[in-house]
Structures are given as structure tokens and as C-alpha cells.
Length: 139
Image (cartoon, rainbow, N blue to C red; front, side, top):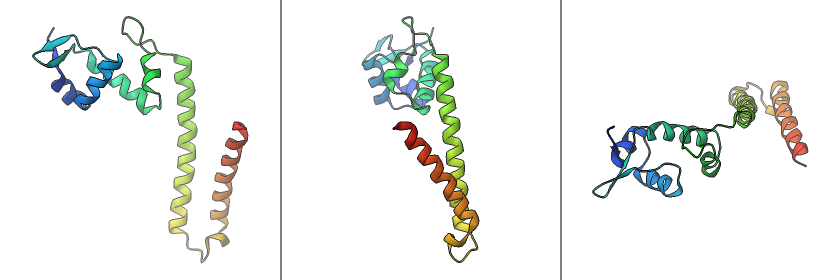
């Protein structure tokens, strides 16, 4: 099996070498040796890095992501928690879509005053109700 040096991994994964060294130090990935001073990695590190990137994009901490790998280094993904995070992302998408629509309406609204525009008032009211429901849920 051909090993990849840290420069190749960095280039193929689009991750800076400094980040790869950090991931290696905290145990998220493991180098399999060195060629001179350059760390060497097995090719499967690219899949692991893709999973780490996906986890980070989904909002998981590096510590949490680390726990998503079994002792053998293979993914041991908590399916229910992933479903819960996907549900959270769906809620965020709906909220961001409503916010985007409100901003676009404000930018294009033909009314002299936004406060006189029934569409603007409805959109702002919808966003306000969502925010108060969230605050109530946290209390």
C-alpha cells in the first residue's frame, strides 16, 4: 500500500498541514510513520478527514467527532444523534429561509413605509413568534 505524505494529504483533502499535524496530535487521525521529517499516512485517512469535515460542518466539536470512531478507528456513528442534528438543521434552514424572504421583501417593498406594508408586518411577526418560542423553550 502506497503511503501518502502530509503534503499529499493536505492537497487532496484541502486541509492545511498544520491542521493535519494538530489532528494527529489529538488522535483524530494517525500517521503511520515518517519519511525524513514528513509524516506519512495510509490512504484511508482521506475518508476519515472527509468524515471529520462533515462532522465539523454539521456543528459537532472535534472532541465529539473523535468519539464517533471506534477503538479500531472505524466510524461508529450515533444514528439517533445524527437524526436529531439533521432535524436541527431542517429547523435552521426554515428559519434562514424566512429571514431571507423578509430581507428580500424589505429590499424590494414598494410601500412608502415598511411599517405600513402588511406583508412586511406579517413576515416580521412570524420571525418574532419563532424567536419567542425558542426563548420560552430554553427557559
